[in-house]
Length: 485
Ligand code: FAD
Image (tube, rainbow, N blue to C red; front, side):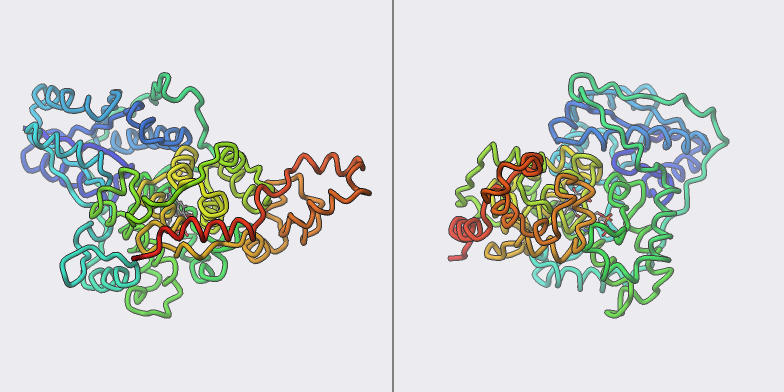
């Protein structure tokens, strides 16, 4: 009897429990390991997976095929449409190849869990392993045996548990003698993805991700607390595209932290504390997705959110998407997303707050747009971030805290170097006008300037779409629906 390992969002051969188990099984029974990957473009389109992320996945599928060939395992890449097509294909595959067990990683999202439950119901020999988080969803609970609804006590308990276990990643799997490296494959995405987007500006591979991690921990982690909020600086790890599709595992990241900062789990003053905390946020949102399946289905965590009367103005939403709101900080951020497929965390918070609070557009619109553009698109983190920003989420930013885009701008891009890069229309504005664009709009509207050539050019950049004080007041009224009781 042979076995299979089904790769999902885990494009690596090191620290891969499912692959390791398959190799152990095959050695024990003197049998073969088959590796599988399913390309499901219709499903991806339904999940709004960004074209850039699919390109990144395609490149990693090819690298994975090469790494597996080096250890004697052939990767079969199967083109289907949706999850529903997998069961009949797998049944036949198991029968033809005498597969006794298929090892794969558990995924936290609702549809993925439904898919796996259906396969198990159909008697497919699927053996699922928890390898997506350091601590498996459901294992970090409060004293009542429930998932935490607030981050800080979750993080405390998470650290306590993490400190009590031996955190040791698995080495890269070793199996048989190498086989021929397969020819590169290209996904055929048909009508679902008519406009491919290249991910070439991001290097590929688990070695690359590990090197980025090491460099970050050696050079930058101690300054992370100070630098992480400034989009003009490279103050964060930029590992999110790799973590989102499992080119590197959370366990590998945390092991590396502990290598350089052995007391990071127990010392509140550890230089790695803040970065570790972000990895715990990642786990928090994944645990939440499993504990509250409604989050995967576009529902408010806080059900009072169902009472919010969103304005959902389609033109304003479109201006936000295009980076044409007249707030340079918001527009620079949206253009970074549109041009690179990635956005700095501080700016994700700024633009999400602007869309949901200043424009009163339903967070689901923004969540979907992000997902369609992001190379690191990840349901748990994206949903968590959007609901946090809108005030509807678990341990969310309170609805009455409305980010002031002008303060955010002057505080986090003080010399406007980030803004000027993405919004060249304002490059020769004074700093005051860049951060407080309503002053500039008045300036243009003054009689002397209105008819000048310069003003005509500058008009290419819109006046602020909404006045901050007015928007803030309106948001407090409308989002007051979130008030308890
Ligand atoms: P670092 O600061 O170096 O953090 C290291 C890792 O920790 C990240 O790679 C990520 O895996 C994790 N992490 C960091 N911050 C968070 C967070 N707030 N929540 C969950 N995990 C976190 N992150 C995604 O990976 N995919 C998304 O689709 C996504 N959408 C977001 C939407 C909104 C509205 C907001 C506010 C945040 C979102 N985030 C998302 C979280 C965060 O912005 C990114 O993880 C981070 O900017 C990635 O950059 P980095 O790798 O340099 O992060």
